[in-house]
Image 1 (cartoon, protein in one colour):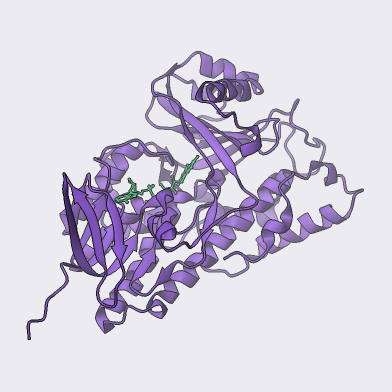
Image 2: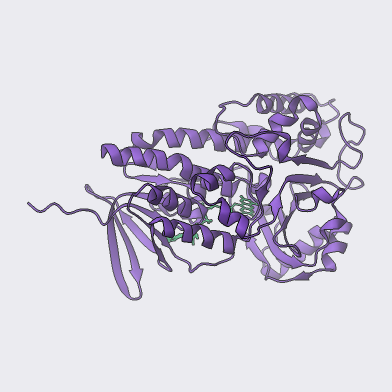
Length: 449
Ligand SMILES: Cc1cc2nc3c(=O)[nH]c(=O)nc-3n(C[C@H](O)[C@H](O)[C@H](O)COP(=O)(O)OP(=O)(O)OC[C@H]3O[C@@H](n4cnc5c(N)ncnc54)[C@H](O)[C@@H]3O)c2cc1C
């Protein structure tokens, strides 16, 4: 009898941070794997500011020297700003600075396995290409410009089907990793996607040359932080992310109901939104936009399951939460960090059934639940975040979440405390913060999938 071997042990769909890091983790220990990427890199991509937990992955993959050589701006911390004249905050609350600005610096809290006091802001075209090339150098096959059309999960090994030129082709493998981002390839094929009922955010963004970052930095050390500027429109904010010494990425995030339908109206919306913070508008008008505006819509969702017999989902392919804390790339990288261990176990035992990937699934669900609840508290009662950051008792615990260390605690005490305070404020109409409650409801605290 002839025993045929599958073409690859693992086939990975998507070559973004999740897929490339998965390819690198597996190839590094000699697993035969292939990454399919439908685009030809470099290509632009949203999601440019990282959090420090990404460093663990770069270190595992011996990728830190490349990150340094690329001279990406170092990100030492984050600042949140509001316009104290317009934003409906209470200014004389204990613990709040008069202008309601808060900042954090990552070096304030030591992280196990992260020996740097900073992380990076990245040009995703360049970063994604570098990481995919790194996976390739470690031994992962990369088929770029190749879009996967379907996966057949028959009784035997999965068959991945794609078209090259006019030819229909396929490869067989022992298992499939879906890293297809918000395209959610397997989620669609297997009908597992559940749209988020609370967060239906939209964004419009571009790059600007000559935007004077000094206009907002209160200290020189804050110059290359990420800035989150709150606008006096409900649940609407702007990101300001350094890309190079002179180029800055700016994007407006808002709820679907505020977002204009047509492209022309969206650009108008961008400028009108920015105009609600005159200092930002003034600074921005003096700079040059160097990319077309790009919009992103309809982006929060979960999947009913993150793994099944002979498949696993990593990164955005499995879950997307609002990007207010710059979480996406870190979740993508760390999901591959966790999942690759279960995949190695499955290859070892030749057992590719769903339970083989349950450690990964449980860890990731716990981490994204914590992110999600933190984000929900933030939108529901914005002032609470400022209050906790400024309170010495909680500052480092909040910082832990902001650093991306969310996978080791089922119920971080600081999050429990925040949720309790939100509930108290909701119940007590006389509470001075009651009128500050946002319009995203706290039913988001229901158990997540
Ligand atoms: C408005 C907005 C702002 C954001 N800001 C941040 C931020 O500041 N920081 C942060 O960390 N994250 C941010 N994110 C999130 C971040 O963009 C993502 O979480 C991150 O890119 C996820 O990486 P990934 O590898 O899972 O997916 P992706 O980076 O999207 O990669 C998926 C890849 O799969 C490929 N692909 C898809 N389908 C197929 C197919 N059928 N065949 C072959 N290839 C396929 C795609 O071409 C793509 O290259 C933001 C997201 C949004 C929407």
